[in-house]
Length: 79
Image (cartoon, rainbow, N blue to C red; front, side, top):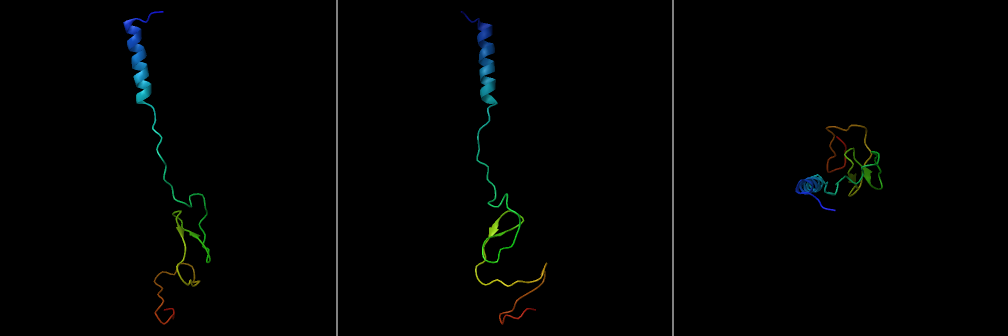
């Protein structure tokens, strides 16, 4: 079985085209809490809406919903 020059170039073109369109596998980076629901856990990991985890470092105080503009002074009085 002999392949003509034309058939060889067609086969070569198809082979090169398939190699050029092959997809490279790249790692996909995602946040750790991608499939977790947003929640607040006072004693452990809290899941933020962005999917990140937050663990409190110190004492936590339960406050009201949307405490915008609230400050806690050094004498621990809420203002």
